Length: 179
Ligand SMILES: Cc1ncc(COP(=O)(O)OP(=O)(O)O)c(N)n1
Ligand SMILES: Cc1nc(C(=O)O)sc1CCOP(=O)(O)O
Picture 1: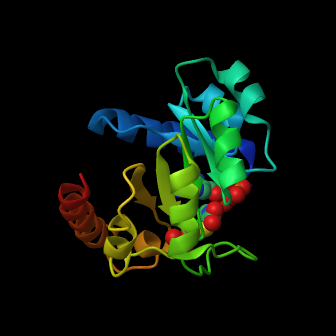
Picture 2: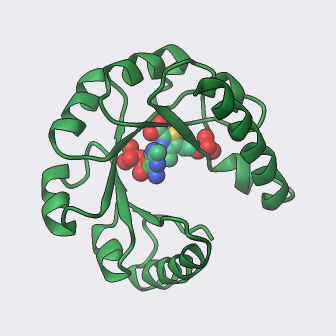
Picture 3: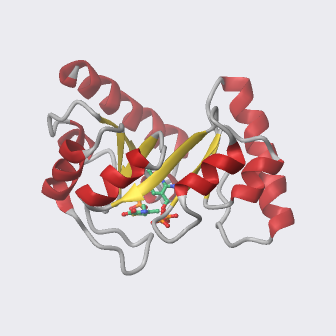
């Protein structure tokens, strides 16, 4: 299920609760993008926030020590700060150009590697990643690069299930190599 982050709060909460029920059935964590209020209201497992959203330390106070907090970081400085502030992981991108997010800086594979090396936290790569290039990302050879986040690779396809299965296979193969 996908819902834009600026959707009306009632609709967002409804969708979040429905997602959470599905995630629970499959033992999958649900993180809410940006909306701390929605995360609290549906008792999600955590949130993902950007550099211009509520500060991590405040989010930690609101959510408590057990919830997962992810932060979008494009630079080594931001990655270090996320750790100091108590985040659990960082998202780093755009690894490749993307049509999903407007005016997004592309940091490339080199930028991703630089941020990973500076980060004390696990990193999730994002931006223009699909089945065709996920292997190149995961084979960067940095141990704290733990996965990829995708939007169009799933939602702009004929079958979300088929693409998810293909991406899962690539991630499992590269995990075996990287470890
Ligand atoms: C791993 C990961 N990275 C980024 C996002 C969401 O990014 P977005 O809210 O569009 O942009 P920022 O405000 O965080 O820069 C995500 N959900 N997961
Ligand atoms: C939401 C988001 N954040 C990015 C960042 O660089 O932080 S790139 C991005 C869009 C990801 O969509 P797609 O997989 O379709 O490229």
